[in-house]
Length: 214
Image: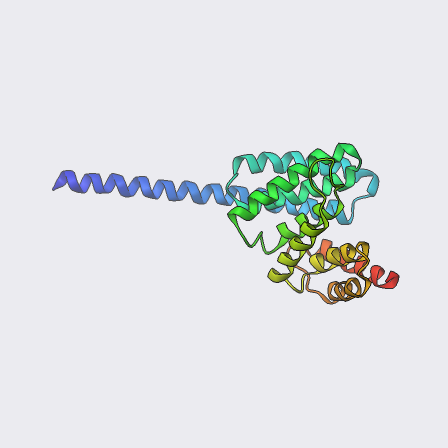
């Protein structure tokens, strides 16, 4: 009887330790990710353009390391994809293609883990990547897939400023001006996300400017 109670005690102690370690790891990555999000927001909305590429390069290295440590956390993977996509866009040229491919692969892994793609953010970024990366160079850049990604994001967050703005720019490029105007207006009227207010408000202003062009 005493042996049975002792074994039960050790089992419960081991379980408690495992749960405590898991909780500690979650808190650790959430703290790092929170800091990274805030610095990304500042970089893409307030930092001088001449300094952005270097700053995004540093953030890309940081989030890549974080993703290696937490490879099964969809939110971490989504943010890796978001940061890499922003870095690729800022870097431009052929040198950005490998970064864009890494962003795409990471985001596709994220939506395998979380089909909601962190409240649609993964699908918005995938849509922008498929829209803007030249087809053939690294095997993606596909209007049909871009449209599909934006549609998935809209199903999840139909009033999102980001998805409606980026979809409006995509539709403009596709020559669908009426639909582009509709989604640009939705972006102007959309709801900014908690923790992403700066970047969403910047996109709202971009949507207002786009409306003036359409």
